Amino acid sequence: MHRSHETLSFRRCLKCEILATDGPIGHVEDLYFDDEKWVVRYLIVATGDWLNRRTVLVSPYAIRAVNRMAQAISVRLTRAQVRGSPHLDPETLSREQESRFHHYYSYPEYWPYATYWPWGAIPLVAPDDDARARIASERLARQDASRRSSSRLRSMWDVMGYQVLGKGGPVGQVDDLRFHERTWAVSDVIINMRHWLRSRVLRIAPEWIQQARWDDRTFRIDMRREEVPSYPSSEQAPALLPLVSRRTH
Image (cartoon, rainbow, N blue to C red; front, side, top):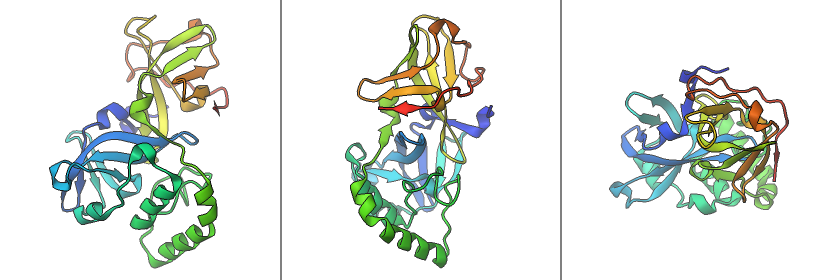
C-alpha cells in the first residue's frame, strides 16, 4: 500500500495553478490518461486572458514539483514555450498530433514502450545532445507505425460517475482517481458506494477492473457486491490488491 503523501488526487489537482519558470500559465481543468497502462500523459491547462483563454497541454515530463499547500505545480517551461506550442484540442487528440507535441518539446514518445515512460518508470528527460539525437533517431524509425496507431487517451473528468458493477449488481460510482506523484501512474480508483452503503467508499487498483466498457461508462470487477469491503473515507481505505487481469473493450 502506498501512503497518501506519495499519491495525488485528481479532484485535488483540479484548479491547481501551473507555474512556469517566468510566471503563471493557468489552471488545471482536466487530466488525460492512456487506457492501456493507466498513466497520466497530459495536464489540460486553461491559460486565461494572457493566451486568449487557450487550452494547452502540459506533459509530466515538464513537472518540477507539486506544492500541495499552495495548490501549485511548477514546470520546466517558459511562457514563451507554451505560447509557441501546437494548438491541439484534447478531445480530438490523434497520435499524429501527440507526435507533433512531443517533437516540439523534444520529448521521447511514450507509446512504443512497455514501461510507463521511455528508459524507465519515471518521466525524466535527459537534456544532453546524445539523448536528443537518440530521440530523433527513434522517432524516424517509428514514424510510419505512429501514423497508423491511434491514441488511447481518456479524460479523467469523463470517468467520474462511471458505474462499477460486481457479480451481484452495482457496487457504486467512480468518485476520484489517485496516481503516483513520481510515475503519474493511476494507483487507485475511488468508488463511492453511497447508493447502497451510506457514506462508504472503496479503493481498488486499476488491475481489479476486469472489463472496462468506455462507451457504456461501466467498469466490471470480479467480486460479488456483498463481498466488497467498505470504509468510511478514501484516506482510511486500503487499496485492494489485484487478483484478475484487466481486459478492455
